[in-house]
Amino acid sequence: MERELFELFLHGNGEPKVIEAAGDELLKEVLARHDALPGEDEFVFVGEADEARCNVEGECDTHAPADLNLTVLELLLPEKQHIHTKAVHSIEVTVNYNGQEPKRHFSPAATVETATVWAKRRLHIDDVAGAELVLELEPSKTIPRIDQHLGDLLMPGERTLEFNLVKEITPQG
Image 1: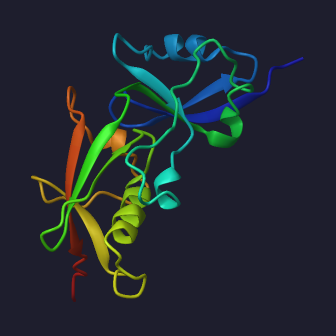
Image 2 (image 1 turned 90 degrees about the vertical axis):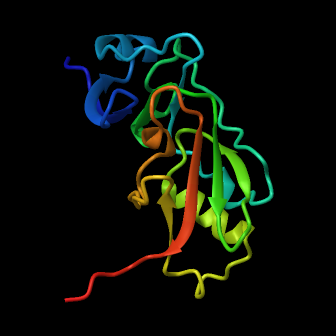
């Protein structure tokens, strides 16, 4: 009988890549096969963290690192789909807007969309007024995709991200 394989997204070794894993494989076996085992002071997270959307006043996500000795199925990876490896434990995010600079510690598995929703709610910007506001990464002034994970935006050795909340400019013509 052939083992069922699941497609998963592996983050942490450059651009995210699609990998396959069997349900009964240990997470550490999957990571070892892809040369993605975490080093000292590095962690692995599974799924996406969106706690900040509902806990706007919280100062940090409680998304815990994954146990590498659990199987793909035990970690619910077929549903969660994302593995973030070689990650920092948390990322301090600062959002600059109209002289305010709220900060929060996010899981590296949180998306830019989650950070954007948090920032708008934390700054008391209503949905209509904030519809055109997006996060712009400092100092590069690039606007990351909303589905990008915060951990993917970090440079090696970094633990902080700074954004400006700006009006999205739509090209004309």
